[in-house]
Image (cartoon, rainbow, N blue to C red; front, side, top):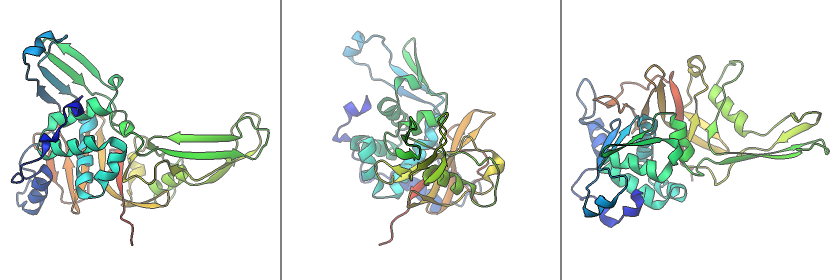
Length: 326
């Protein structure tokens, strides 16, 4: 586990620019027609070389290299997490309560200093469970394959960050399931069965979070079930990820830049996109009001966009909590 090796040796040279500073400078000074960043950022895959010493002789199995495959299932979210932490000065402290202070500090250091393969291993070994990825030893190398779904590999591993609960009570005193609780660790919103006018995404969020009264679904019960408002278990999180996998392109003609969620206001920060033909994820996010597209599989993988991206191939939407007016 990488955090075991985590020490105070990660302070950056004060003369070195961080990755985030380089990206912001590139936005400010970009006159190139292709509007691309000057070097690859968080490229797909990765190779981590182990410096084997004398003690390595006793290792079983012995390997001196770790090869990462199909990392797009975490790459886009790692990029978004990095931008969110840098653009919001109070969020690192808040996220430390869920992900751990050492993890947040080390994550930022690795991204700041362009240690991209190491930051992926940090996520894999510190946040993922072994059953969530495949690993095999090939001669002198360990291969870790993250092929799958990004919500399984990332969103579900955000600890209790987005945990919510909703209680319900049936009006029938004899209902065997009169009192129920519905806890959830992620935010999965379903598209409407019919497409009405207006903000479909806000309506879907309201359907999940708002109080309501419905017929009790327990067999033989004719009571009415009253649902309380769904609330976050640990207070409103600094950011939320909306799982949009079930939505069709025609249902995404309008993506709200502002979202009312559990008595709090959230602002659109970015999104992850899924290309079904390539089974590949990419991401888009904002820095200083400019939209940037990230695709770790491309040689030129960070491109400044002339306009907001099309959200027709959405996998998720990422919103950050708006600052409260004092």
